[in-house]
Length: 99
Length: 392
Image (cartoon, rainbow over all chains, first blue to last red):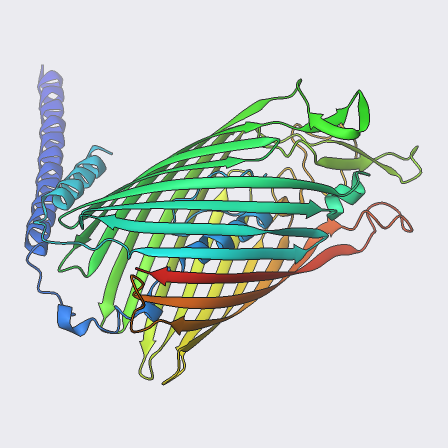
């Protein structure tokens, strides 16, 4: 009888611990989501640290990642046809029968 | 896992809920380019024409026509005993962009045709400017479908080659891209790109062969048609950054890491410099690129026997090798004050010197030494581009 009672108590205790863990995890997840959501909601109103009128250097054509798309597409093709690697060049790519 | 989805959903919701004001579509522009590649016994040249035009400041359409005229007597052709061949590749692409607030939606379609290969690719992309336009997030997806064929000697005319009616295979391709561009300071911008590509189908080159040891043969080796796996998935990530120098010049650096299910791992690094000459219409540029890769799991220069393993390939593109490229370019700006409907134009001449050095791909054309002891192969290439760009 005594052993059964102890066993019941032990099962209830472990069940309680599991629920507490789940609750803690749920609270942690909710906190992360809430804080991220709060951060993201605020992000729309983030004060840009580089003002629009301070972007003349960034907007200069010599700063463009892809100043000449017709040339960069050709160069990507030249390398892709001769190297085993592909992708992450920033372009959409396309089948070229390179194999 | 559910937590990750929740975060992703929250992020996507955030992306879609950002108040929009105005984004920017690419400039109206036309480019006419002539390209030429010479190296490794191969000459490839042809034109490329790209035109892009905005409509109602909300839409942008683009069209590209590209051609390759190929004359090849590469090492692969020579080792197989075939003679020099000529072929053409024609490719056209159409693109459509729709700008709504700070979101740009893009659609694209590309069709590439050779006498023995046909590739089509459809793509969709979305990009969003965020945080006062300091950040741009983009995502894209492409689906490709290829038809692989091969040519053979015409049984009725030995001097003529025809498409082999008994050989026709398919390849399906999927590509997923994510990109992030960030203005970091008044003079520094960086971009991160990640892309996963999966192919399924006939991924061999039907003309290429692997070689295996055959003591009975006078060359001590024989050739057999390659056997590639039918699936291939690759992951690549790149980071690139540009910095504006006080004397109006820019310096940039790029690094890319690549890995795939065939066992190839590679690293690519590039640095460059762009310098407009003061009080002249000239802009000069120079860059250096280095690439290194490890060989595929099923690659060998010389297999011990014909049935050594399930998959066997000897493409030099699958071997361990490195290449270096030096790029020099000059651009001349004309019609700076406008000329008729033209706002400005540039005339550009670019030259690249490339050097490929293989660590486990041997020059099997050398029959003076036992198979497997030939000198390692290497070749250089010259790449020329001449193009005119007009903004209107």
